[in-house]
Image (tube, rainbow, N blue to C red; front, top):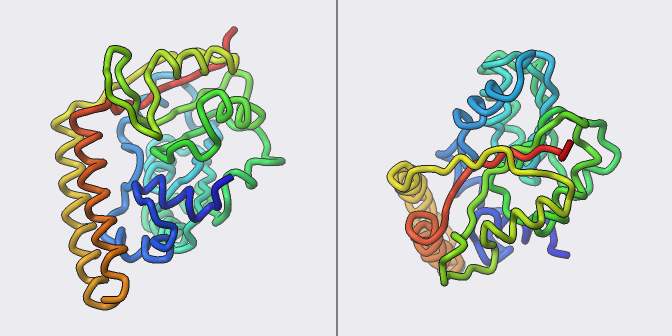
Length: 257
């Protein structure tokens, strides 16, 4: 099993765990660093009526943008967990700023361990965190213990089209994902695909800020120059993957009846 540092760096499209302590600095200009809060808000409103009564578990919550905006919109309780302490500190500050400090709880921790012994939730969000728990079958069977019988998973992820010759170490074809979802006793309710232009606009904004901070770190820590340059290159490669080689979507999953 990967260390939590390795898992976080991988989720941030890095390849060297030495990058972990520098992520708060590199990503300091960005709040929404994972899933799209607006897309998730729409999905929740579509699948639930009494949204104020919902209990939401946001795993790998980053700086809390999804939980905070969901709570602000619906008045529901959200619990976010992330491995980076600085991200959690920021999330707590933003929750107060958005006047949802009483609705949002944020904690630092390893989401692979924290889920053990948790109560059940109406919604479990996995917002662009990668295969932290393994493939879809392992992820869903592991986390189904934390999901109410009528609850849903909302998963922001990417997949390879079935007829594509492209391969990626962290991506699967849609048909494989659906098979794993089915084997886990779930079914795919919705597959909301993002437009390529929207993905590119978001990637460009994130990359510009990320690149600027990496260059600042190169000046501050010249002995780590290769680490930060490699991260910039890795981001360029992954952006091309997101924009031209895979499908990016937000999926809604529910237990089979």
